[in-house]
Each structure stands twice: as structure tokens, then as C-alpha cells.
Length: 421
Image (cartoon, rainbow, N blue to C red; front, side):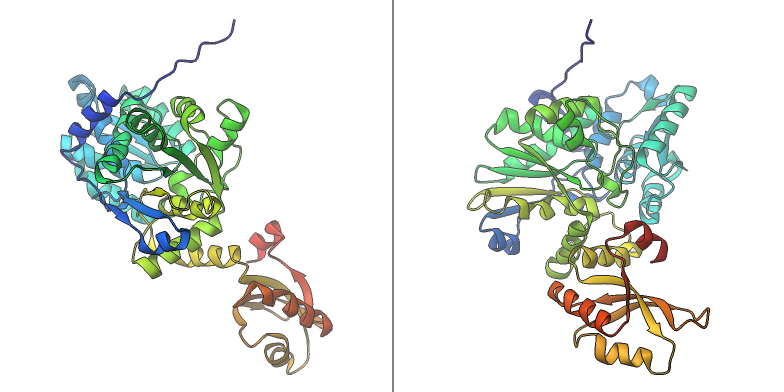
């Protein structure tokens, strides 16, 4: 006998009720036209600025709606959550506002900025516990603690009240837009926001196409939809921490499988370039997950021409200490940063020859690691070179080979690359 899967779909009446509840703590965020992206894609590109909440992400909506729905007995016992950062801040703020004791589990690798913000919003009402390398590790530890202590677990995405809270983003979009919305692009981690938007738009604007966007290194919803069941990824790239989960929710999977128009993934390097573009050209600071939806527009360039398109900018909790890595990943993705093992002849003037005769006029050495360990004829060095154009790579390699400097190219050897660079 096959197991019956319980289905849930957010109802518009519950979403309207959630909007009334969260109005106590969450102001309406703007829906802004991006002139630059609108010109780039020949469409009306609108940014839903969820990064402008006081906790700098939409997560305050679901967290506050869920905690507000608890009984007095549950509130007195306290709540527990697990989060890579944004949900943690939403729960912390809700705990402080409602004067509820909370315990918040976060991965050890969570950016310090998010940990500090969580402690600041929660104050004396929350305890932060760093546990595990991923969100999924933290969640397992949090649920064990929750069961042992008889507390209520506030799920970041796979909970009806959380989903209904996130769905209020859709209500605001429809209230703020004077034109019908053709497409909404939404970042997908566990799927709570995407599920909520499906509920709102199915009820009020069923012709709107909802596009889910995941990091290429953590395609948990895409793989689940492809296989027709929730799957747990063995390994994920944790860089886009706000949308990197190994396993999506059972509730959110059923909704997204049925109602998302399409699921796509975006390489982490492309997301990094989008972060830099938003900062340098638009003075908008976003975290990696917040840039996912805009980074995905390239893949729909022809489809969205002349359309009204909303990109949900989900959060801006970015740690400035990550800037160097963001730039590095962007350059690698754009094929502008390249690493080599260069074999320098052990004679005077070899480095000068490399700089003067091998490098192109616009090439720049950004990494150099060398030590003379033997009396061999040629000694290897790890050299990072930044180019002005991807087309400069092949001529550079050719000059290195012709002059016996070339040892190896590291970019396409991830294991060696991570070990050496």
C-alpha cells in the first residue's frame, strides 16, 4: 500500500491574515524599476527590495507570522530555529519583540556579520549556538535540542505559517504594480518564499510565471523536481549561504513541483559578478542569494522582452570580508583570472623576461608564490594573472610555451587549484 502524501497549499485568506500580523513589525518594501536592467533586456525590470527590511531580508515575514501563531504555552516554553543567517535574524527580532525565549542554531561557517546581527536583534531573549558546517547540520542539532527541551521548532521554510508569511511579498508586488506582472524571479533555498508566491499569484494573478532560481552548486529543488521526490544532495557549494540547502521541504517541494513555471540554476561566479555590478553601478548592496534572481535574467533574455518582470532581491546581509572572494569568483567565471604553474629558469633576469616578453601589455600579475628548493634547471612558481579580455588567454599560453615557461594550467584542475591557491 503506497504512502499518502499530505498536501498543503497556501490559501489567500490566510495570506491576507499573515499580512495583518506582520504589519506590526515589517514595513512594506519598495518595488523599484531598474533603468539599467530594463534597457539591457528590453523589458520593464522591477526589483522587489526585500533587502530593505530592518533585518535586511524577507525572513522577518515568515518568522514573525509563525511565532505569533503559537499558543501561550508554546511561547512560554520557548522556540528553537536553525538558519544560515537571515531566518535567524527574523526569529531573533520576533523573539525580542514578543518577549519569547529563543535558541538559534547556525552553521560554524556563517559569516560573522550575520551572527553579530542575530545577537543584536535578539538581545537577552536569544542564545546563539554554532553547530555543523551546513544549514542541514545545524537543523539536525536544533531539532534534537528542541525535542529534548520540549520547545517549538520554527522552521525556516517547511511550515504553513512560515510560507504564508513569505507569501505576503506577493501581495505587496501586486498592490504596488500598475501593470500585470508577466514574470516573477525568486531565489530558492528551501522553497518557502517560492511556495508562498505560488499561493498568492495562483489566487490573484494566475497568468504570472514564477521562475525559481538556485545556485548551481546547490540545486536541491531542481534535482527533486527532476526525480519526482525530495532528494538530499550529498555535497553542496556553501558560498551562496542564503540559498544553499542539501534538502528542500516536503511541503515546499509539492508546491514548487506543481506551480513553478521553471527551475534554473546560476553559477556562483555569475552571481558574484552581479553583486559587483549592483554595487558599482546601482549602489545596491546584496548578499549572494539576493543577486540570484537578477543573475538569472540572461537565460531568459528573449522570453522576457517587452514584459513586466519582477526580481525579488531577497537580502543584503553581506559580510565585507567576503569581498575579495566575491571578486575572485567573478573574475574566474568571466575567464579573466587564470592561475598557472610557471617554470622559471634559475638564472638572473628570468622574472624580468617573463614580465617584459611573456605577459601582454594589459596583463597583470595578482598572485605569485615561489621558493627555490633545489638546484634544478627550472623552478616552479604559482602565478595568478588577471587579463583584460578572455581572448588574451591563448596567446599568453602560447608565448609561455614557446619560451619554455609553461608548466601547467590550474583553473580546470579544481582539486589541485584548491590545494595550491
